Image 1 (cartoon, rainbow, N blue to C red):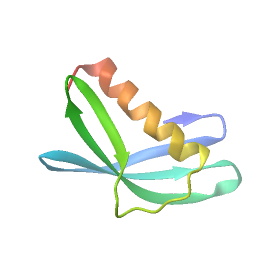
Image 2 (cartoon, rainbow, N blue to C red):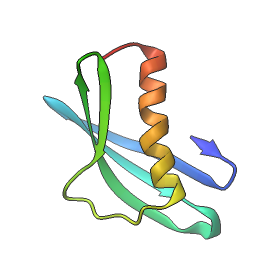
Image 3 (spheres, rainbow, N blue to C red):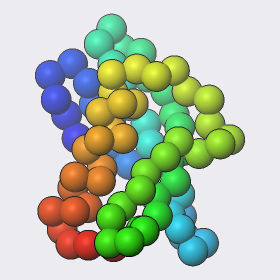
Length: 79
């Protein structure tokens, strides 16, 4: 996904009940980081949170990935 000065890519998806997403993001200036997101379906909605083992910087690309991934999944169908 790309939007102006920020990009993120979901590189891998692991499943053990809920989903664990490996994400790589790049912000303006070329700052790149890798982090993991937990995705679960609850009450007909997607819930996406930073994995407790990840401690990334809260950059615009990270915040955007937390909004954009559930939007894309909701557009494709409910959990």
